Amino acid sequence: MTVLLLDPLRPTMVPVQAVKLLENPILFTEEVPVAIRWRLSGMTTDDSDGETVLISTTRDNPDVQERIARGEDVVEVPVPEAGNLDEAVFIMDRLRSRGGWEATQTHDSLRTYLLEETYELLDAIASGDPDNIREELGDLLLQVLFHARIAQDAPDGAFGIDDVAAGLVAKLTHRSPHLTDASTGPIDIGQQERAWEERKAAEKLRASCIDGIAMAQPSLALAEKVMARASRAGLPDEFVPDTLRVVRLDVGGDHGSDSAEDRLRRDVNDFVADVRAAERAAAMDGVVPGTLDAVAWKRYWPGAEPSAHGHEGQANSVDPQ
Image (cartoon, rainbow, N blue to C red; front, side, top):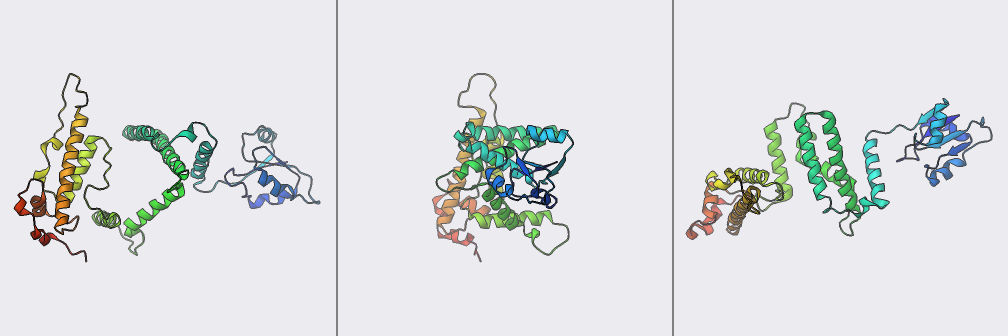
């Protein structure tokens, strides 16, 4: 007597050592798909030794547990590498497809959960507890799987988790030339970072150094990101206002919408508007986006003398060749 446990995600896969067993009389538990039962039930041969084989896809079935308790042999299909990840995708699909709460969710309705799980992961990292980090990474992975599964149902522009992974693989390989070059020595981190930024810029063809920043992130993180981007783009330090450098906290009283968070966000948005205005003015004079130097920033910054604008900006153009 033998129990054959199939992988529920790949029920058509049967290990070589179990092929001979399929010549014997076969019983199935209710979890086994009907299509698999039809395929396997006709394989019994006349010269079988009469040993019954119970085929299931789970150890939790009572019949399987009873046979295991009696000491019957168990042949189990090994889960391939990344099999648990495949199972997570499978479970998410079933939750979404079979109705209930998961079937009613949208990208927008999950925003709060995504934010909460991100902060919980940050807390876990701060704690240094590997078990906690693993658990919170799983919760964040659930959000990725959930959003990808929701995207499959979109009437336009539908995509799935494989498309998400494919996009990530393409991005990593394109921006990391050291993955495919012939060098075998240690990677120079500075060179790696430059290659990443250069290829990223070539992919995005951004008109502004601010493009691509998540403007919905907390205002303090947003301020740091915006200032770092502007600095890398050559913006002189003198144009960064003090309101972005120092956060004022008012103690006491109800400030309503005039909280430190809101004040800083407004100041960041004003600064971003000035950066974009300078870049647009430079572009009108033919200055290639991303090539402004300190002199050009001073010339095109909002409030600069009108006489400073004009075709002399062409001197700051960079030949894309």
